[in-house]
Image 1 (cartoon, rainbow, N blue to C red):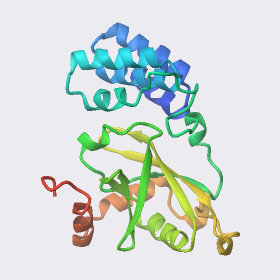
Image 2: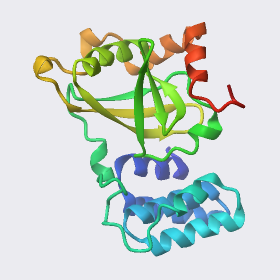
Image 3: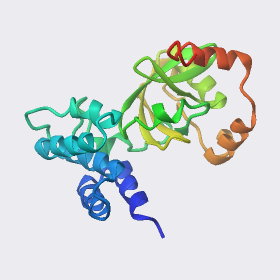
Length: 237
């Protein structure tokens, strides 16, 4: 049976924010100092346009943990005036971000992800950047490295990106040990009009789990490690 905490996390992935509020409130009743549940509740409030409740909830987190990075960062994003219901500051309807389109979208588990203190701060629906470097695609939040695409997907996308396709990427789930993102083709160049960005089935080869396990079994090359260091702060590199 799925635990209440897992259910609360899953509601964010599906965009069911009303249910997210209910589930996280129940968790907080059991443990009023459950910071994770409080942060999820505050985020759900902000998505629903309940900015007053969102700010109050983030303030409660900061009373418990004054240095909590999630609350410190997100309370600054909650405007004094109400957000449009069901939207993020970038104008996206979060419940629509993860709509899958065959050939145009793909859910990918990143490899060689950043330390958990970086990954744990990512929010569902947060926009990420895809950066091409040395025949690989690195994923960043701002200038911070968070992970890299598996080689098979990365090399395919590089061909399309260099040919004029454009893509967007969003955090789908992050728990410190795994980081899963959602990639969406936003523009297809004319010469690729009949070529999907992502393939499935026999042509795609292994499943996501199989690809991930196989890729993780391979050790980092020296070049990969050097590339990652390019995106790390000096003290981490």
